[in-house]
Structures are given as C-alpha cells and as structure tokens.
Image 1 (cartoon, rainbow, N blue to C red):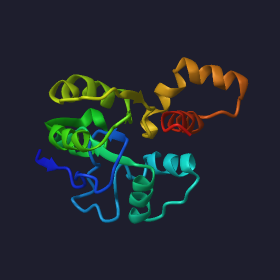
Image 2 (image 1 turned 90 degrees about the horizontal axis):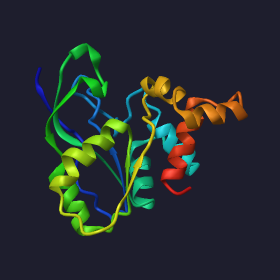
Image 3 (image 1 turned 60 degrees about the vertical axis):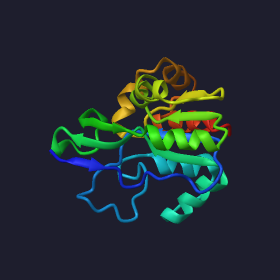
Image 4 (image 1 turned 180 degrees about the horizontal axis):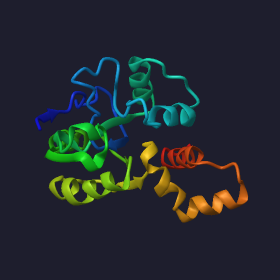
Amino acid sequence: MEIENHPFIKLPDYKVDKIILGSFACLKKGSYGEWFYLASGKSHFWRLIEKTFEKVLPTTQEKKDLMKEKQIWLTDVATQAIRKKENHGCLDTNLKIIKYNINFIQKVFDSNHIEKVLCTSVWVAELWEKKITPKLSLSQDLELIRLPSPSPMADRAIRNNDEYKKLLETDKNFNTFQFRLQKFKEGLGI
C-alpha cells in the first residue's frame, strides 16, 4: 500500500460561491490523462452536471470552463490517501485518509463568499462535519447539502430512500439516475 497524492487539488483562479466536495481521485494506474474529478468510467458525476446545466462537456477544459462560469470549485476531502486493497479501486470504503484538504479549503473560504458546500455522499458530508469544519475558521453562514453519491454502487441505498420510494410510486419509470439529477438540480439551485 502506497500513499497517493491527489493529482488535481489546487486553488481556483476565479471567484466561487459553491464547493462540490468529493472524497479522493480514483487511481487509474498513475496516469489520469484527461480524467478530472469524479470521472471514473462508472461515476455519473459529469453526466449529472451536463444534464443539470444542459451542456455537453466532452473535454476537461469544457468542464473547467463550466465550473468557472457557474462559480463552482471542485475539490475533495483528502489530499493524501492509501487504498486498503488494490483490487477494490475507487470505492470510498477502500480509502484510508492520510491528510485532509484543510489548507486549500481554508484559503478558498478566506478569499470567497461560499454559500453552499455540496457533498457527493453521506460519508463525505460526515467527514466535512467531523474532520474538516472543526479545523476551519469560518466567518460566513453556509448551507451544507448532501447529494446522493454519483457512484452506481449507491443505487441500492437510493432505492431504500423513502423519498425515492414515494417518487417511484407516482412514476413507475422513475429511476435512480433521475433521483440523483433531481437532487443535483435542487442543490445547485436549478
């Protein structure tokens, strides 16, 4: 098990008012290429962002440009982590966090007026509340939004969600992706 350093974390070069917070980059044999935040082949994240903002984002630069336009900073809770089992790849349950992303997050709060932190899973929200915010100096009110995980592994949890079950009762064709999309739109104020 080796320590992985997050390949994408850096300060935004534009003003932001929202942070979308994930866990840690998915290792792809050390070569990320055009991969950029939550872009593993199985994650629905960028498809959800495209549908939320009604844009097609085929390149990393177009993704970055949309984040700038919408004043969103993408980052993760960890800057260093270890994978407990090599063959379990991108699962958050496989992560052991070595270093939290406190310094970069503090710098963004110091130079921006952040209104919302949108966490890409319940686990990320718990880490935000227990490991990160106690170490931050926050001078502004902040809305914490727990989004359903964009990982297909979260489908089972979504199907057990009472709100999802009620929506499914009114529309038998309603699915877990549509539920995620609804929550992303709500969270981002669309």
